[in-house]
Length: 357
Image 1 (tube, rainbow, N blue to C red):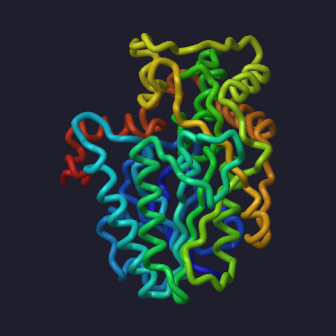
Image 2 (cartoon, rainbow, N blue to C red):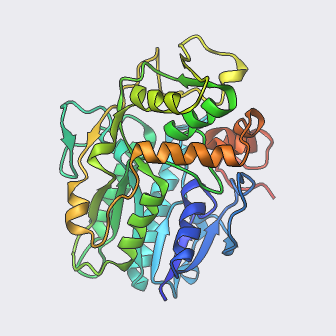
């Protein structure tokens, strides 16, 4: 039985990944600082947990594991007075530090990157792993920087894997409502409005959370003989969608719902949680369509099981079954940026995003 260390296991993806791997017989342990521990929509399955900041990990924490999956990090752009350097330089540095320790200890290292690195695509075609990147946010720039750092330390003894995920959606014990499909499904059920932040013309690839988990599982078992960083886009070619078409699909699956647009002048408190601070005047410059041919060719056993249409219907049913209402949907713990801002404002964490004891 392989021993898996998941760093950042109390987030959206980590909570589902931990139980997904446990259900399939893997021995999992989680390390997390606990910023989102309270954000439970359903009860997570128990897992051995160490409360520790990823920046403070040592070789002692990693030794004895077969695989380390690094999920810890800030998944939104800077807030308040904090600069992108304050947020993302430490994220890059500890990711590469942990990777270096994994190399020394002979531990496989798997890193979740993002298709957002393609940013504002200049060509109307499917972008593959060799296409130029054009990141539009500090978050996606950081992903590229980590990939570049991993490439530099790769050799015939250490071949890390970077998985460039499409926009992940679907049910998790600690859900996020600040990603497109989850947000629009939550809005439709709790307010009867499918409200868009933009004109909806941007393209995105979408990835069901269980397919993301399956890609990790396949990488865990993959005995590759590469001497370099392996970069894989994760998703289905058929699941590149315009945001407006995602909204229409959700609208058609929720009776009595209304398709609306937020508008650039929407400053009311009611819409604060769903506003995307990276969209200006209704236009989202982040638009890209991605090819997922490579992963099907080289990652043994991997295939996405979920279409977007099936995934949306399943998520809507899951949210209906737990009785999602407006109060539940608006909980700050389900919005990563707002939760971090709350902890900082309440002086529970400091400017370096460490807990204040």
